Image (cartoon, rainbow, N blue to C red):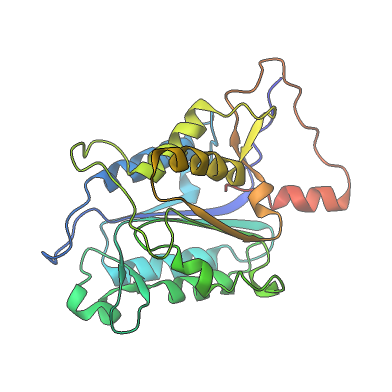
Length: 275
């Protein structure tokens, strides 16, 4: 008997953001990002892996920066109480503003010359997530310099209660660029491809589910050997230990984890979410 899908019939909001085409000629297109969104959507909606209701999945693809900001705010507001889980994913360019050294995510209309006005500040994303009342909040950024968000959220201060229940993953450090295969645009970017492959193939962890924390740790070990930029995780609380997806590599006779009976157990289960 395999484990139940802990996300099924739970209250959650999933926002997948991808930008692969840009108006500003100084920002090269990243066609691979289109496959990021396609593959992420598949693992979320396929019952073999996560299996959420598609109506709970919001996709923003090649939107303007303002439209993306609105999507983020709406998703954070939709996760309106502690019974909800919130998951936000972004893939696209991350750019350092030379005027203030802040990192900005990009929409299709982002202009490097006017980055402050046309970009999506990591600080703004941080504030939107912080304001959400969701019990579990997960942010995954697959973009250059995305590691700056860990510093902005103050995860070096363990007592940051306002970020309780938050798990943030960046594909790179603040000083590194995310990788994608320019010769093969018909595949996801390196980090997202590695994440999707682990969900599709499972991990021999002795459990019938995967947590995002161990998935990212497994990617980090592989990337270290390959010499790729290493993903970074920050978290306050146990969200990173929560079931993320079914583990297809679990033994066929694996006994499912029983439903918690205690109040604390049920509360933790309600926080169970991806990553």
